[in-house]
Image (cartoon, rainbow, N blue to C red; front, top):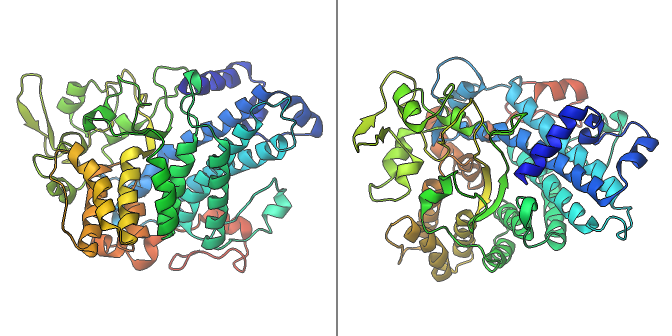
Length: 479
């Protein structure tokens, strides 16, 4: 899948004739007919949609800086520092970028669905799969948008500019209803797995795993239990060694992999990710030790509170939260003070020959996350004995003692704690705090205000719509 995307982007760059195709914005009926003719045409169009997810997730992690578990290392004024200090505003480019990029993906998917649903399966042999992938990606885009901004426009077909200006914000409940519908449909159409270069596309397991997350977020615990239990029967297993999750010399499509955003280093144009560069500390000795060329972003650094939560014998600690490094002679070196950050995560550290060109994928969902979600919903459904089974599977891999004998409330807190340790710097903490109603408890002491559980609707969108009756700003935020 990484190679398919790289080749596809190269075709666009070097031929120059496919720019309209990648945007999925046909200029005339003739153009539509010319573009959408064969199964491969639709397969390439789906890849164009996947490519947009790379743009979205390139900065989606930034929202986690608003949580209590990661900090921004620099003191220069930008949106990352403002999120860290809760001084962000509707005019920050981050919000407009996320909004535009997610709706660009939705726009592409709607164009694709408009064309593929009318095709004859004798010609477009993978029609069902194309529809499944498209609906999976649309659901993912809407899931990110609704969690960040609350009520949002719900666009399910190709609309004109005039129509778009008349579309107000739909309720969160209506958006979730559509997300669930798309994911159920996608799960019914997608295959269990792929082979060869198609590995990396959305599968039935990916659709059901994200559906489980949606149900959990929506507090639909019974439905979440059913679908997440189904995922446990689909052949996924934890890797025996937690650290192998972050070894990019090995195949990232292993037994714990469910769905990643795919990146590929060493391509031209660059298809690598920026995580190694972004999350590296500004410490020359550490950069040299890991062979990281270029600058260091000094951001998404674990908080000292998070570092101190890890017990020394927790096997996840070495890669999750670091305050130094051990050289090749076994000598430990703490981070040199004064560079801006006292911590970093090794989860994305990899030797780089050029800036922001890492092979590291972004793990949207992996099997350990599924196990912890299932433990959570089982506990909420008063099935504590079953909950321990899945929670302790994750604990054993970490070399930690198993839980037992807790009350429902205590077990809930243990599961929350385990998610916090297992999923460090993977972009889950903020969303976990918000969905469980603990954001103010965790972040209030850091200057967060209650209305900040939702981010502001981008100022440029407010100005374009210019109609607060159908398109109001989120409470607490200025226009």
